[in-house]
Image (cartoon, rainbow, N blue to C red; front, side, top):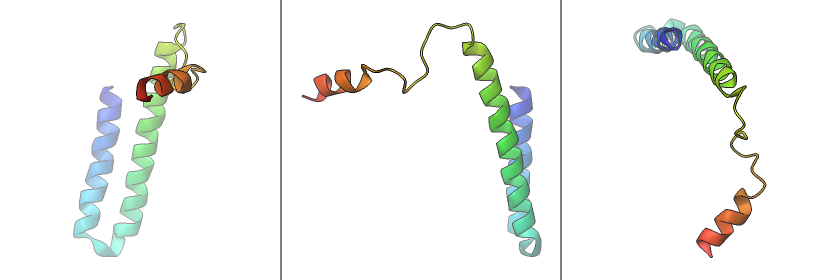
Length: 74
């Protein structure tokens, strides 16, 4: 999780720097998106590893979810 924090800090730094350098903002904002993408990939891998041995279904895969929500709202 430390890696994710550092990657997001890099993205933030790129966004902040782009505000002070409008001539390079397009490049810095693209770089910020790159760092965020890497952070999201690492988080996804981490949670996939954590849930690999779990018997829980991923969110959205519950066929009874729609049925239970209609019972609550009805």
